[in-house]
Length: 338
Ligand code: SF4
Image 1: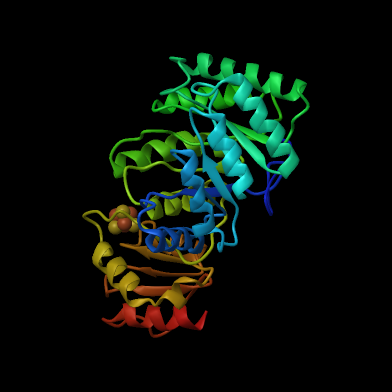
Image 2: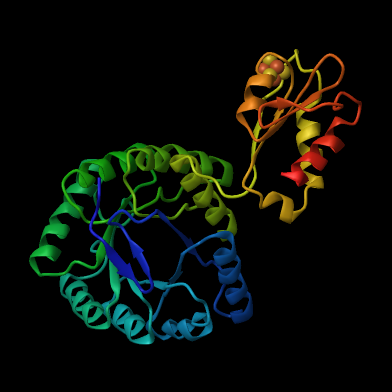
C-alpha cells in the first residue's frame, strides 16, 4: 500500500521510497565531540535520519554541533510549542511532537511554521503519553488527528503509533494504514533488555514491514544507539529479502554434524576482513549431508561437513581438491576470488 510522499530535508519518505532507518542520539550534550561521533557512527552504519531529544528551548543549540552531518536532523520536542518553534528556526528538518502532552494550538503553530520552512512533522501517539490503553484507542486518536491536520491543509507529516505491547503496536498500525495514506514511522517502544527488545522489534516491526506498513523505522533498545541502527538495518534487509554485504547461512548443528559448525563460523567471521565482509555474497556453513549440499548450492559458496571433513560448493559446483583437513582455509581463498 503506497503512502503519500513526505520530504525530510534531502530525504523522501513514503510514496514507494525504500524504508528509512532512523537513529536516535543518546550522548549528553555536555560532550559535543562524543555526540557528533555517535551521530557519525550511526550514519556510517546506515541510518538515514538522526533524531535528537530537545528537553528545553535552549537545547536547540545542539543543532550547530550536528549541522556538519549530511543527513537530516529531527528534533524530538515535548510539552511546549516554544521548543518546536525554536528547533525549526535553528534548522531541524523535522519535528516530532505529541498531542498527548502538547496543546492543539501549539501543534498547529508548529505545522504552520514547519510549512514555511519546508520542514516535516511527526505526530506521535505513544501508549505512555497519549492516554489510550489499547490499539483501538491509539489508532482512533491518530486517525482523528490525521483528519484534522489534512483538513487544515498540511501534508508534509508522518504519524506514529507506538506501544510497549507488540500486539497493540501491530494492530494500531494495521488499523491506521488501511484508512489513511499518511506515511508511518514505526517502532515498538520501551522494549526492555537488549535481546528481548530485538525480539519484540523483530516480531512487531517484521509483521508490519512484511505487510508493507512502515516508511521510517526506529528500533528502540535499552542499549547503544548503534545496536538500534544495526537492528533496524537488519530488519529492513530481512523483511525486504535484500541484503548488502556478506550473508551467512548456517545450520544450528545437531548430533549428525561432521564439523563443529559454531567454531567454523566463528573462525570464518573472525578471519574475514572488513573488505571481505562487504562482498554481496551468501556463504553457507552446514554441518552434514542432510541439508548441507542443498543450502550450500543455493548460496554463492558453502562449506558442507562430510565424513572426510568437508567439501566446498561454489556457485552450485563441488570444488575439486577441497577434501583436506583445512577446508576452511580453502573456503576463505575461494571467497576472496568471488
Ligand atoms: Fe544437523 Fe546436518 Fe541439519 Fe546441520 S545440516 S542441523 S548437522 S542435520
